[in-house]
Amino acid sequence: MAAEPKIRTPIVCVMGHVDHGKTSLLDRIRGSSVVASEAGAITQHIGATIVPIEAIRKMSGTMEKIPINIPGLLFIDTPGHHAFTTLRARGGALADMAILVVDISQGFQPQTIEALQILRNCKTPFVIAATKIDRIHGWRINKDESFQSTFAKQNERVQTDIETKTYEIVGNLSDLGFSADRYDRVADFQRNLAIVPVSAHTGEGIADLLMIMIGLAQRYMGEELKLSAEGPGEGTVLEVKEERGLGTTLDVILYNGTLSVGDEIAMATQDSVATTKVRSLLKPRPMKEILIEDRFERVKSVVAASGIKVSAPNLEGVIAGSPLFVVRGNMDELSARIRKEMQEIHVNLSEEGIVIKADTIGALEALCKELEAKEIPVMRAQVGPVSRHDLVETETIKNPAFRVLLSFNTPTLPDAADIIKDPLYTQVKVFSGQVIYQLIDQYVEWRDEQKRIAEKAQFEHVMMPAKIRLLPDCVFRQSNPAVVGVRVLGGKLRADVDLIKLDGKKVGHLKTMQLRQETIREADEGLEVAVAIEGVTIGRQLNVGEDLLVDLPERHVKVLEREMIKTLNVSTQEVLAEFVAIRRKTEPFWGK
Image (tube, rainbow, N blue to C red; front, top):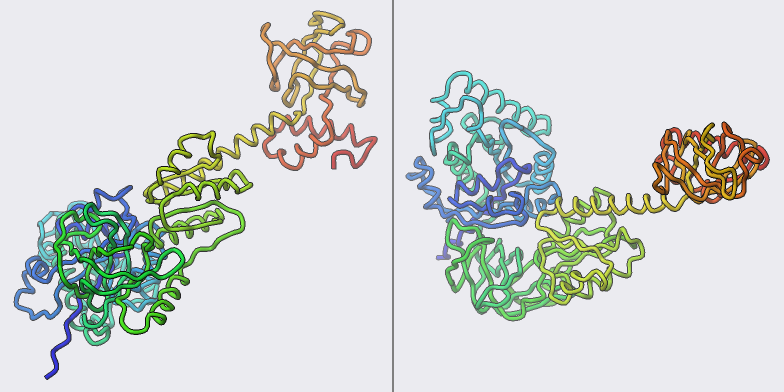
C-alpha cells in the first residue's frame, strides 16, 4: 500500500499598502516585534515565519475539534512601499494563499489595487484583513476575542460605523470585479472573498482570520496545488550573509520538496551557476522570523514549505533572490532553468545614468523601478558590496549629476571606504541607506542642489542686464575716473562692465561701485550707489539725469534668452528686452 504523500506547509503572503499594518499583524500572530526593528518601520525584505498548527489551534479555540491535516502556515511578510511591486509580484507567485491588509478607515490605496492585480494575475486565493478596528472612535476593546464576540459588545453607533466601512471595501472590490462580504456572511468561499475585521494591537479578530486561512488551505487547495513535500527541494535565496562560526550562509524559502544535509544544490552567481553540498541546515524556532532569528535548531532534513538557513562551502558569490534547486539528474537542464529565471529579472539600463548596488535581486529591481518612475536613468545595476572597482567605473561617467553610486543595504569594502572618505581621491558621490525611497530622495535633493549651484555659477559668469540713471548733485569727480551717484532703475548692476546710451552709443567703462563707502560687486533694482566710470567726463560725454544701459556681449544675450530667461525677474527681463531692441535696430538678427 503506497504511503500517503507528505503534506507541504502552505505559504501565505501578507500584502497591502504601506503603513496599513502588515508586519504588525504578523507580530500579533507570532508574538514578536519585527516592525520596531525595520528601517523606517517599513519592511525592506521578504521575511518568513512558520506558525505551527498547534499555535493556531491555541489562538483559535473553536478549531480544537476540527480535523486539520496541514502542519501549519508559512507566512511571508512582503515589503509595503510601492517601490516593491516586483518583489510583491514574486511573493504573490510564490504564495499559495494571501492576506491582503486594508486599513478599515483608510480603505483602498494605490498599493492595495496593485496587490489585487498581482493576486488576480497569479490566481492566488486570498482574504481581506480589515485592520485597525480598535482605532474606530468609541471602540470598546475585548482583547483577543473573536470579531463576532467583540462586535456584539460594541454600541450601535460603532457597529454602524464598522458596517459602513466594511461595505465601502465590498464596493471597492466590486468595482474591481471581485464579489466579497464579511466572512461570517460568506456561504461559498470559492465564489466570494472573505473580509475579516481585525486589530493587530488588541488581537481582536485574529483567531477568525487564522480559521479562515486554515479553512481555505484545507478545503480548496489540497488537490489544486498538490501540497506534497516529496521530491527534490526547490527554493528562493532570501539573503546571503556571514554568520559567526559558519561563514557565508543562505537564508532560503523552501517552497517545494525536501532539502537534506549532504544534498548537492545549484544557485545563480553574478555570471554563472554554482553548485555545492549542504554542510548543515539551521531551522528558526517556530513563531520566529528568519531575518532576525538569533538561535537556530540544527536539523538533518527540512520539508516544504520552510524558512531555512543553509550552510555550505563556496557560497560567497551566490546572489540573493536566486532560485535554489537540489541537483537530481541532468545538470545542464537545471543550469538552463536557473539562467532563464535570472534573465527574467527586470532591470532597464541606459547608456548614461547612475550606478546602483543592492544586497538582493528584488531590492535591485525595486530600486530600478522607483528610479525609472522618477525618470532617473541607471547605467549599471549589480548585487553585492561596494568595491573600489565600482568607484573607478563610476568616476568615468562624464555627467557629474550621474557620477553617483546608490548603495542599498549592502556593505562597503574597506578599500572603497578609504577612497570615499577622502574627496581628493574620487569625485563619485555615494549615497547609502536601508529605505529605498529615502535613498532616492537623498539623491534627488543632492542633484537638485548641484543644479542650483551650477545655475548660480552660470548666473555669476553671465553679464546681467541693468539700467542706471545719473543722479543730480551727486558728481564727486568729473573725470579720471568720473565718480558719480546712480540709481539702479532695473536689472542687476555689476562692476567691471561697459555702458551705452539709449541710442546705442558706447560710453565709458563702469569699473567699481561703492555703497556707504564700502566696495560692492553688484547692486539690485532701487539701490543708489556711487560708481567709478572710466573714459568719460561728466558734463561732456555724460550728463546728470541721463539713463545708461550695460553693454552686453552677444553670446551672453543668447544664454540669457535661451537658458536663463525664466530665472530673471520682470524688471531684468524688461531691461534685457530694451537693450536687445536697441541692438536689433541696426542688426535685426543680433543675438538670435
